[in-house]
Amino acid sequence: MPISRTNLSSFFLDLPSLIAISQLLPSARTALAAIILLAPGSLPSPAQQPGLSAPNATAASIREHYTKFEYRIPARDGVRLFVSVYVPKDVFTDARTYPVMMTRTPYGVAPYGADLYRPSLGPSELFSKEKFIFVYGDVRGRNMSEGEPTQLKPHRANKPGARDTDESTDTYDTIEWLIHHVPGCEPKVGIWGISQPGFYASAGMIDAHPALLAVSPQAPVTDYYLGDDDYHNGAFMLAANFGFYQNFRPRAGEPAPPQPSPRRDFGTIDGYQFFLDMGSLAEGDEKYFNMPTHSGQKSSETRPTTASGNRAPSGGT
Image (cartoon, rainbow, N blue to C red):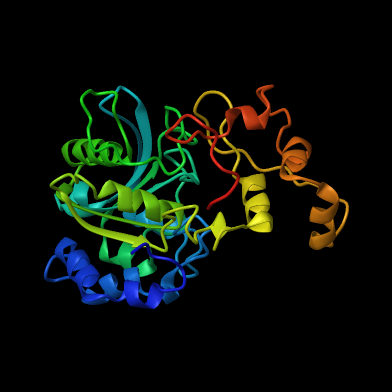
């Protein structure tokens, strides 16, 4: 059954999930870290980039204990997928090795630049103190990763050629490269994510790499048309999707870090009146989305496509 935000309590603390996460942790590590990963109270808002708001961690303390690397990992079809990797410093001083905690996201893995550090790592501060190799990856076609974006790309059961890729193959290829090229990397990988990153966690465990031992999709986007963030019981979530896509613009041009979304004056603080005055969805698209970008293209011309080649629906998180 797809996981929705209405049945989280039955998902987060189920025994199989705890057992799966515990496989990633050496026996000397605390089981509390696994519980925190799955506990609802540890979740940031779906709109947040995971790991950016832990109150007791700073970029300076992460820099003190971790070394950051940035890589462009070649997928099987030649597309290069961008990742930022944080390696504990005792890998280099004491020859320590660590398992991997990975998140794949369309929202960006800021800050970009090998000398710029996140203020926290992992689902909670406990994880950065426990020490893992932390990997944050831009999914195909988003931000610094090459390729064409396809929102919630369906799994391909049959892949006769190297160009037949999906999120499962991209996850597999990423793990294969990491465990052979990142210093101190053990062949033990866990993936977690919330909302769209939760979808990428779910999709990544199909036909999984042998080193993928634990997966925690938290409130994942699963089906836009069956009670998820586009349609609730068949009703289009106009306000939610309008607001989301104002800030979730497709990349125009070559791979680049995400650009700040421009602030707009909508002419009123009355949201209900705004949507009454906007007109039809087609009129709203023309007024507020079908506009030139910094590359000169119109934003609707570069909207992510679905697997069938159609433009993605105006919704989702």
